[in-house]
Length: 197
Image 1 (cartoon, rainbow, N blue to C red):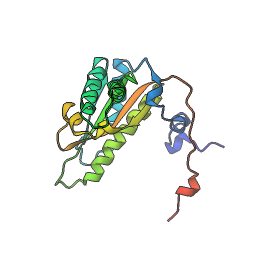
Image 2 (image 1 turned 180 degrees about the vertical axis):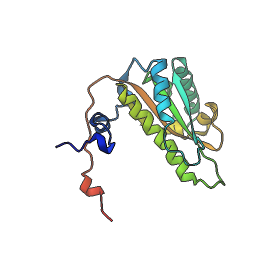
Image 3 (image 1 turned 120 degrees about the vertical axis):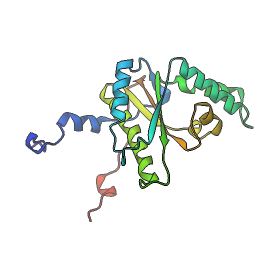
Image 4 (image 1 turned 60 degrees about the vertical axis):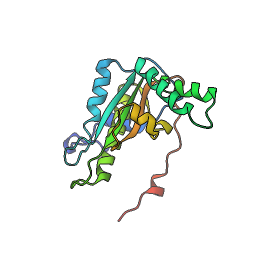
């Protein structure tokens, strides 16, 4: 017997099936094509429909595609070259990091302090934007991966891509198609993570 009833205004079964089928695809195992300009705009439009206490818009997006991915690779290579343990192989690996997917969306968390809205809620809103971008990409037939990696925390990288001192990377959302079929990972048993009060 289905739990769905149109009179109760519950989500359509297709929506729940979509949510229950979502899984991450490795950024290392993606291929093109990526979203078209129209598809990307729809993904971004979904990303701004997240809860936002105080209507602060405590996030913004940076799109890496085409030559922008190569420019980002040069920034990463230059930033890592001065590190003590950098090697030619590591530098080349970083130069190619943003070439793994056809489109990457950087989600920037930009909180406002000393206001009534807690910083934590603003940061949660940025996280919700990340997850909504991932779900929107999945709904459009793409695979997505929400990751940060070292470059999300490196001061030189953040300065070069235009972040202010008060901004942080909430995530890089890699979007493409999987090279190989995706495998699901084990999920926690609901009974092990759920209590009733």
